[in-house]
Image (cartoon, rainbow, N blue to C red; front, top):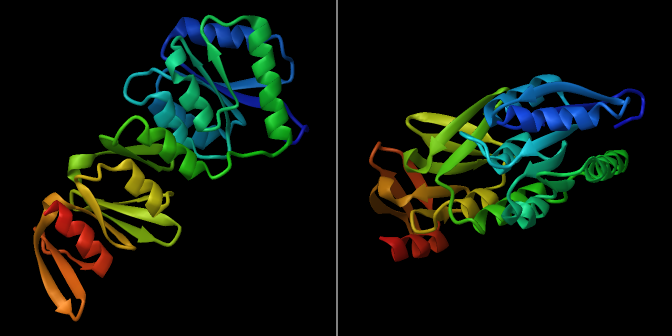
Length: 250
């Protein structure tokens, strides 16, 4: 937020009445511009990619993608205020560094307080610290993920965990290999490992996280060095520590 223009806002909620309430409360603030309203998470990711808002009012419970999944896809540069009728999500919302958490039905005064808090955050240029770690920590409290969401510009790829062959570290990204295709995600290897089921995925090498169901065999490659050969013929290096971890699951 640079102070030279209106605060650009997107409202995301699957209930039209809930969107209308937020829009009505925002109308009292002349320096706010609602650039889009979205009824689901996929539309929200697309709108954020195309319209570059500064603040998102984001419902938690929505079909297809919930609010936390949307936040993971949006990244760390956007201020988010969660809105929901369910208070059990409050702790997790703050774990992922949401600006505020509005419990429906909320008053106009409480709404204005959240908006003021968002302005302060934006003026301070205070993005979420260690965003990947915060998202991973909040996710692990809910148990292993059943799908991986990957943003590709305005598009979102949804990978069921069962389709993932392995994950490979590539510079500042990780690459998910699934269904014969590769998908890059702006994520750390540690965050990917924390999100996936440890009884199904094992870190066989500092650069590889493997779905054990894909292993055909493990061969000795050199002294203290092994290679995992997958059912599709892929060959992945296995470190000494990785082999010890792998052996516990096989």
